[in-house]
Length: 421
Image (cartoon, rainbow, N blue to C red; front, side, top):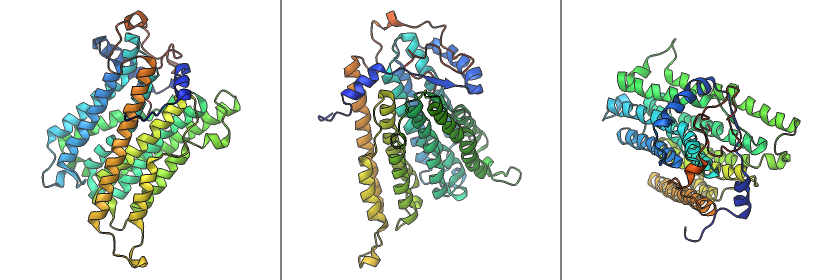
């Protein structure tokens, strides 16, 4: 890792004391998905490491992204592209996403079966999920296309998805408990079914109005309204309750809002670039712009996850935002007013390419470095089950959540049994 270390002694000591605590009251999750996952995980050999399941699921979402991008890179509605997206692509994407969702649901159960539960599993899982937060919405953008859902609106939908993913981790940073939102299971089912329907009936199916309203508008408003109704108020109440009853971390106001600073900075800088770009970057390179934003978001989110799991102070600033500041400044500067030639389209493109490349390499290095340091500290392998793990294997009959929404043996369940979104 070229001599760079991301975890200090405080982080590692915090991970040693970490105990997973979450609450899941989703009807779909508790009464349908967990019984299903409990059956599926029994077909998984015990020699398969839980993190391997997690990583495989993530790779399936990446495969979907590149496969769909190959046929429709610039979101020119799937049915109207020079090379229409074949039906089999949508069917395969639906299968891949549902398999990824299933692997995301059984990785923690596999950890208990193999006796390999630990903080690395949860960090690895949630970290990869934070990257998927930008990939999965892009599937839906491709279905509707830029003609019905302009890239600037896609951008604000993406910010809404980021916020919905990030706030539960801020909530856990303050309360010490992960309250799993109801929306995740319904979203994964919804997107999978939507992809399958597109493969069967074609993208033109989503041009049919519902009570006079195009499906793309229903999709857009559903995401915003569901966040305002089912997510944000509940998070605020849970945080308030933890302070009122003194059950949380009891951080001061300045410490409580620290995690919001880097995320707000990311939103402000990216939005300024989108709205003030000299050449309309969001229309020129929407897919790449989303990936750049998603990579920065994932890095910010991963650092918060490390802080809340190790019970250390959250970062006030993310170093990768310095690169974004420089590029955003160069792309929105009023060159003619300064007596300089206007910034060309190609130069702005190259700046986006360079920024995306740099932040992607830096984020991969960060993720690999953190995993490597944790494996070294706990003397484990990320993708391998230890030979003595069987001696610590948990009771396989204790895989399900209790009907009150809490996880059994939650103080020992350091690997996420379900999901975080």
